[in-house]
Image (cartoon, rainbow, N blue to C red):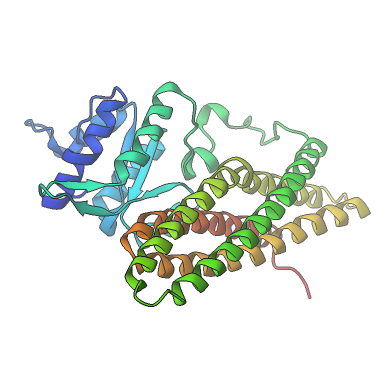
Amino acid sequence: MPFGLLPDQVYAYIIAPALRSAGYDPKRADTTFNQRAIMQDVIAGIKGADLVVADLTSRNANVFYELGLAHSMRRPTVMIAQSTDDIPFDLQAYRVVIYALEFASNGRLTSSLARELVPLVQAARDGSVEYGNPFTDYAVAPEEATVASGEPDEGILEIFDAFNTQAAVFGQAMAQIGTLTQQFASEMGTLTIRINAPEPGHELENVRTVTAEMGALFDRQASHLEPIVDEQLAPMALQVEAAARALVRLSSMGEHTPADDERLQSIRTLSNTAHTVGTTLSAHAAQIRQLSGIATASIAPGRRLAAVTGRIAAQLDRVAGLADALLGPEST
């Protein structure tokens, strides 16, 4: 995380206690001082860490560089930020905990971050959650690389079978997202009516009550959507890429059959669906960010929901872009 009085307080009063409660011995890589180069200490700290917590707030260049190092070293990493605007496009498909800061009556810094951070770091410690990043998801480690001849490890037919299976999962995920979005819109419509039509003399009380319910709705929706992006959509991009590359390999062999046209159309259809839904959810995330600013009770839950909705949109955009990148633009 960046230097500064406020980041130091976030670490001392929120992040470090949460890590200690899960059994970790927290250390900031930038607070280890000796006669060696500072980056040597930073790299050694990341390399030896059981878990890395990266605060993306303010888009600090050093933080992003060190986050890249953590990803390339395959260290389990929890990303946090105070705003979805701090998350670069390449990371929007991954979970980032969005948090807000408040000051208690005694002047000490408080945040909902501690409540959300504790179960995440505990899960990392007991191995019950798997952490992905662009490097582990898309780069091939040396020991996993194919043989020097360039022959693939998996047959083309098996790749297409896996794609068909994943495409069915994708369809279920899209249907689930559609149902959740409709239910959310209906409940939000009811809350909007209530906030705009308070009983005379109870306007402020009405705003507080409704925005608290709105915050709870944001949290519920985020809890429903998070497993979808982590468990169903994340593998889809990898499978679309594998299937598209398999079609390219078939084309290079000069072997083209009507079945290949069907496979190509399946990839195109899935890609177009991903693009349409992704565009809709991007706009949805922007609306949620605006709505969440009405009252304090809805800010943190709204940021969380906007972040997970943005992650789904980014993952869908990635899926949609793979077909064009590998197969070329669809002919009209």
